[in-house]
Amino acid sequence: MSPSTESPIDPIPFARPCIGEGEVEAVVRVMRGGWLTTGEETRKFESEFANAVSSPHAVAVNSATAGLHLALEALGIGPGDRVLVPTWTFTATAEVVHHLGATVELVDVDQQTMLLDLEAVERRIRQEVSIRAVVPVHFAGQACDMERLLALAHRHGVAVIEDAAHAFPATCRGRPIGSLGDLTVFSFYATKTITTGEGGMITTADAQLAERMRTMRLHGISRDVFDRYRAPGASWKYDVVAAGFKYNLTDLAAAIGRVQLARAEELRAARQQIAEYYYEQLTGLPIGLPVVRDTRDLHAWHLFPIRLEDDAPCTRDQLVASLAEQGIGTSVHFIPLHRHPFWKSRPSIRGRRFPNADAAFSRSLSLPLYASLTHGDCRRVVAALRRLLTPSLSRSLVGVHLDEPIRS
Ligand SMILES: *Cc1c(COP(=O)(O)O)cnc(C)c1O
Image (cartoon, rainbow, N blue to C red; front, side):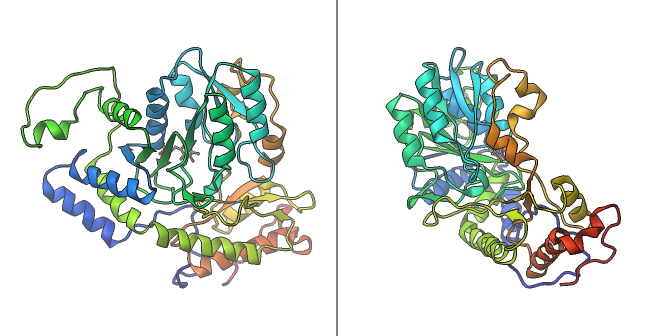
């Protein structure tokens, strides 16, 4: 938490990237260097990221969505295959399965942690022979029980591709996320824990999968453009070995990423401090606070999702609106996939029930959580919640709103 500098009526956005002079200077340096797209800077970012998560290979891409697509493609997933995806996620996790011609099978989540329900995963794997992969989402920055998931998936020959869009840096039983699954995909989207504006990274211990993804991220060309034009012995020759994609990361983005990577633990610690403040200050209100599965793990604290309880004096939508009136941004993670028109009409999803996700959805909202949130901002968020959720103070919710901003 930074010391308070802003006046209490300034809006508090839901998310804000933490960009410093270091990131600005790094971009300027690359701009002056004359090579903007994938090159040396991206290569350094990959090797520093691989090192940070103790993985032998890291492949930089222009989004986590691209990374998930390449990961599934490298495993050869296609028509006739089924892939398990939690319903409690962003549509990107599932859409790439569909693009490859495979079938999305949604699975419910644990009602407390909102992480993939591993018993449901096991039941589905036992019932259905064509399940080729499972994509756990480390929701809010907390790791799934990877040890248990990997053991059960591998026992049945099912691959594990982690959607770690929320989970950098995080650990599971002391080991970094990015060093555990068959493939792990991170996001550097503008709201994520570290950002390159748009960007992503895939890590894997499998050299062949890494090679396939490197080829497919740039048109299925067997050597990347930088090698052709800049490396010693450069030549105009190249082979197209597959119908690839245009998923490479620019050096401009990688330059931002390298500085963010170096600050990742500092930013994580700042978010953790804010999460601890929320835990401390939001007790005694009719809201459920995030449930931590294993306190020994490092939590990335990408999100701070709360849930209104039965005796809350207002609905989630009313609370979101009242906070917005006070200039406090919130968001909802997630609208479960099975509630969206496209996914709910899929034959593999139609008619299925996801009671835990449904029960949580209408009560959930996520509070602002980012390293540049000031102490004053956090106090305002807490004060607003206390006022809106304490029955005697919440008359304001029936039409009349709080006319005065809360002073910190
Ligand atoms: C943000 C997000 C993605 C997509 O990341 P992009 O880098 O924007 O493609 C995928 N899965 C989850 C759970 C996310 O939150």
